Every structure is written in C-alpha cells, then in structure tokens.
Length: 174
Image (tube, rainbow, N blue to C red; front, side):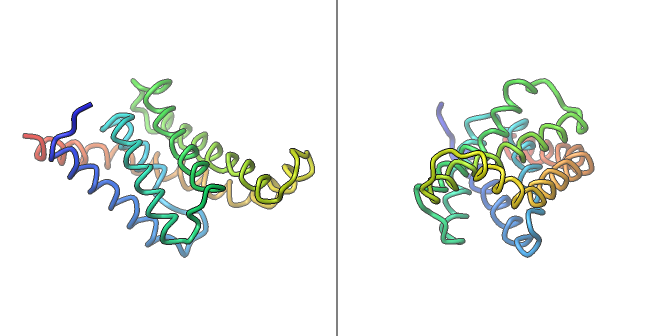
C-alpha cells in the first residue's frame, strides 16, 4: 500500500487525538474514548492505517507510562488490534451504533483478557486456573468500566463523530 503525504498527516493527526484524549482522561480508571476512536478509524480509514495508528499510539503510551517492555507492549498492540480486525472483517458493512457498541464491548474484553498472558509470564507461573481466576477477579471491575465506557461512548457519539470525520476527510482529500 502506498501512502501519500496527506495519508501520513492524517494518520499522525489520528495518533495525536487518541494519545491526547487518553492522557487527558488518565485520572479516570479505564474511562477513555480510545475504543470509540479505534472503531471510527477502522470504519473510515481501514485496517492498515488504523493498525499503524495503534502501533505508534501504543509505543508512545508505553514510553510515557514506563511500561515499554516485551512483556506488555506486544500484548497491548494485539489487544488493540482486535478492534480493527473485528470491524474490518465481521462488521465491515455495519454502521449501526448499537452493533458497533457491542463490538466495543467485545474489543474491550479481548484487550483486557489478553493481559492474562503477560501477567502469567511476569509471575513466572505455569498456566494455572487459580492465577487466571485471581487475575480476572482483581481486574473484573476495571474490565466492566472499560466495556461500559466503550459501549456508551460508541452509542452516544459514533454517529456524530462519523459525520464530522466524513466532513474532515472530504475537505482533506478534495
């Protein structure tokens, strides 16, 4: 795939938006607009551009939070990539905010559950039902917050953001 200067500028702007909103909302545990934005970018820009946004955003996020290491970074990227993967395959033709809100819940849970793997690696434990159970119980309230905030932000804001982003894309590329 060949990228124009406009594509690079657009991807950079999207990275900035995702990064800045996450930093602004960082005082609220797992309440963010990241899932909404990844769903929006997946539907409007496609899998490749959204994947680039995810990788660079995750790299910046890990650098800022000090969590850039081989235990967490690849799993964080994989977790976030589940959203454009789902949006650009199974729900490619879907624009219903209610269905996309459900995709947001699924993506949030996949993102959360994928962290079981690095947590087991960090604990130097074998896959053990009690470790997984403990992790899920400890993380369950935060998973629920992320899933609910993702669902609500998508059903409330997706259609408005989609229309606004279409205007930006039309002016930007014309």
